[in-house]
Image (cartoon, rainbow, N blue to C red; front, side, top):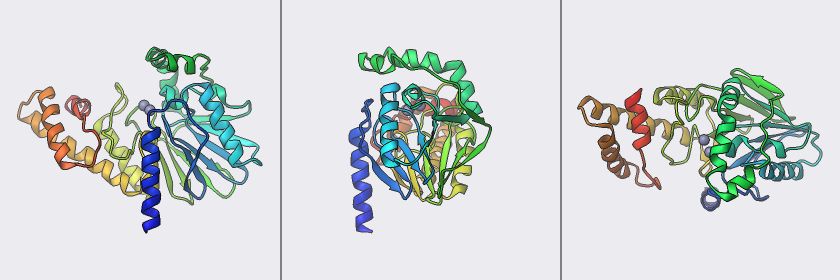
Length: 296
Ligand SMILES: [Zn+2]
Ligand SMILES: [Zn+2]
């Protein structure tokens, strides 16, 4: 148990250091028997079977995509087949597909692809405008049409390991995709399940209730390991904690709404309250999510 705790602690520290690094490195950590991760902004999952490899997320721009493809090839030199999928359409998750080698099989769910077609380019321009470094990284970003689009589930047999790509509904975005790796029982959770991070709904992505409905389906998977995109990996208890936090915040916010408390005041009050309730969370900026709860 002690070794396991030390391992999780090391992962947590690595994740914390790497969380704001848009240029991904080539170091990996092993999450479970078939799953490795490059820790960074965002964390990238690489699922290795004995015939094929699956990468989840591209990093920000083609240079990061190329780095990930190199790491994937190093982890499984014999694998000819490379699949690529994305947790959601935001540029640090999906804007690097041009860096992957020709022949990479791009696969994502239909809801996510619709968002990509409607707002993918707009988001790349938005992110490129945030810093000179982003601009450079996104300069040659090209969004290509997926080779495979699925509605609710696609199963990839990678040889000795299966990746289930799942769309359970809207949460952080409309097209949030989850990857469940069997037999490892490792969940690659994107923004849907994070490690002590206040959830955020992007524009009209999902709603607090749709997020909770997604989490019910995630809970049924009974994950043993969870690798989120913007926080440290952990065990399956992260799923229940995510659900508890959102339900808790929703109940409290709806109570204040009933009392006629203005949404901004509710956000401030709940920030204080939840800092006490969840003291180990690094930040408790709940005002955005409280606004989503009020709006639903
Ligand atoms: Zn996002
Ligand atoms: Zn992100």
